[in-house]
Image (cartoon, rainbow over all chains, first blue to last red; front, side, top):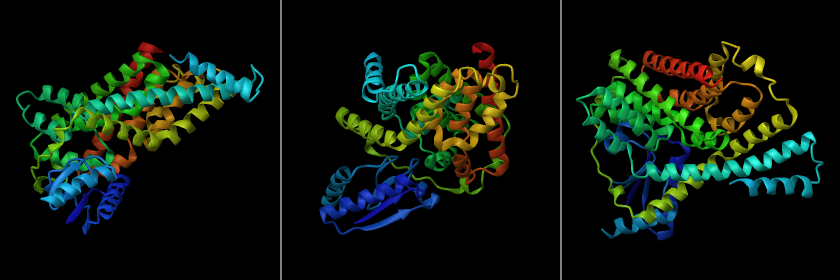
Length: 81
Length: 323
């Protein structure tokens, strides 16, 4: 599973990355993490608000920092597919 | 509504701390306790309500609405400025927002109406204004912010400044991805709103407390009207000075507004105070640095000049009306 956080590296983006890592760890999911800071790449996902969470190239949400529990739900769903 | 809070502040000041009633210290401490509680209650309520309303809007939706409103550009400006209030906006998102709008074929001027209204009508500023000055001033703040955003956007649109947008902006291909965020239940929405409100207040509380602290000190120790000479109605340059002073102070917006009510008591006129607040929230240095990535210096300069003039004009207008 590839988990990406899109954003310019502001405090919110870092927090989201932290939460995503914790969520994957708590679920025991083996995931690769990537920070996408390049504006062209961010725009290619159609995202206008950062930070955004992308799981296996699928945009999950943008413009907010989701909590660990919420990301766990998302990852469970995506891992099931 | 705040009588119990005042009673609590009185009990803490006079009975627990045993500070003699009528002393300067008592006045400062009492003010600090009362104002801190009052401001945090109001701030929480107002940010919660605005965030909840915002959960129904997104920049993606705004873009779609605006890109279909091409027949009448003035309606598009008004709509953009109104949507600027209700869409969530963090200055980190200024660049992707700008590119997304321009790519969708929204005119540059309309994009600016949105970009100006979003930070100018700021929910924390609105909450604190309401807490300190009441509904009338809070509404004046929103209304003048909207008028500046609409007018500035129209002027920028008329000047045909597309050539001053960085070239790469027009080359980026924007993906079209739909997020299934609208299918939220009311409970989910309320929970997210609550979380966001708590996050936001955690971010600003230190500034608010410091602002109230300085305000409390002024309240106890500096006599009413002390600043009337330098920043009152009779100094014609006070508004310009206040606007210039506000630009580098963005990160402390939350701390400045609780102070402003004290400035008022000290004799700073309302229009001057309003200009100061608007400049703090709308002409921020960090956001300009971000916008520099998509705007050439000429356009950035024009943007600052037009918004700055709008803020100064508002200041003079309100000094004239309100004194």
